Each structure stands twice: as structure tokens, then as C-alpha cells.
Image (cartoon, rainbow, N blue to C red):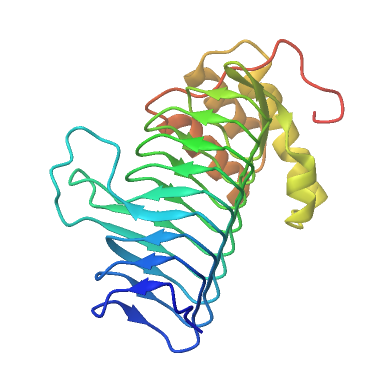
Amino acid sequence: MIHKTAIVAQEAQVCGDVEIGPWTVIGPKVKIGSGVKIGNSCLIDGSTVIGAGCQIFNGAVIGSVPQDLKYKGEDTKLIIGENNIIREYTTINLGTVEKGLTQVGDNNLIMAYSHIAHDCMVGDNCVLANCATLAGHVTIEDRAVIGGLVAIHQFTRVGKMSIIGGCSKVVQDIPPFSTCDGHPAKVYGLNLVGLRRAQISSKIISDLKIAFKILFFLGLNKASAVEKARKDIPQSPEAAYLLDFINSSSRGVARANRAPQEESL
């Protein structure tokens, strides 16, 4: 059902079962999939695709132009996957000509007042708590949890199954499977809760604990730490992914807190 006060451009492609609340505006290049529910006073604009089953709450602004002075009106895109929950007053911008695309995967919870800037890539099953702020070109990998009021610097990569504590300032890549916190964010240990929820085996978790000690808490440089970890632990897909992530980081990886938490390591 489309409320009588909503404004939906004739050119917009909206499935017949979509619900659109009062005073919401849908632009001419928008495509909205089946079962989407859009609340009151939202704006959905630009070349934006919203996948089936998404819920968009009051006041959200989706597909607005990038907050980038280099943007000159190019026809860039925003693609949002299926079954996402996008809470009140969230803003998600189009891409810029540099990449051309901002993308959000499936089954994410994006809480109120969060901001996803131009050219960001958000994976699947992520949580962005209230006022999480992603600068341009940030990558959030699958099952990551971003705490409330976290600010993430442009071009930063947040590894899968990591968790960042509220109010953290993120200026370097966050390693996968990690618990990070602080200003700037530092590595405290493994995200054991996230790993167990993802049904990662106890053997692999044990190997990752050893890898984290080598990588972050022995005082080795990156090359030496990665080499030692490859020799000392079995190369499961998770361990290999962790080491490849560390080795390929162009921004550098968040440093360790001085001492690991006993439960995490």
C-alpha cells in the first residue's frame, strides 16, 4: 500500500506489494523489490536498488548524492540487498565516479542515525549500532559488529566476524575475528562470542588464539609475525584468511592493546 501523501515518481520501479508511508518521496531511478516496507518521511533517490524484504524506518535518506566535493552529478549507484533493517534517520549515499557504487549486502541491521558514505561496501549479517559512521570507501566484511558512535576513517577495511566497541575511533584496518576498542581502536583479542555464534569449531578457535598471540602480542614486525604464524599453526581457511588479511593491508592493521584479555586469548 502506498499512502496517499507519498510521492512516487512514475518512472520508479516499485513491486506491487511494497508499503510506503506518509510523506515519503521515491525518485525516478529507484527500483524497490517485493515485500519492502518504507516508513514515514523517507527519501529514496538516485540510481538506487533496494532488495526484497527490506524494512526502512522513518526519516531515512537513501541514495542521496555523495558528500564529496569531487562529485559532479555523475550517474552512480547504490545497491542494497535483501532483508536489511534500516532504522530511523540513517543516511546511505550513492557512489562517486571513482568506484561508481555503494553496496550493502543482505540481512544487515543498520541502527538509527548511522551513516554509510559513498563507495562503501558492507557485507552480509553485519550490525551497525546507533550513529555508526563510515567515511568513504570503507569496507565492512560479513558478520562484523560496529558499536554505537564508532567513526571509521576512509578506505579502512573491517574484517569479518570482528567487533568494535562503542565510541571507538578507527584509523587502521581491523583484523578479522578480533575484538577492538579505543581511541584509536586497538586489538584486545578474539571475538569469541562472534566465533561461537558462527559455529566455528573449538579447534579452529584454539588455532586462532595462537595466531593472535603471535601476530599482536609477541612484539614481532608484520613480516616476521605472519611467517611464524604460518609455520606454527595449521592453515585452516580461517587462519589463512586472517594471515592474508594482515599481509595485504595497505593502511596497516590496528595495534594491540598492551596486554591481551585472558578470556579472549
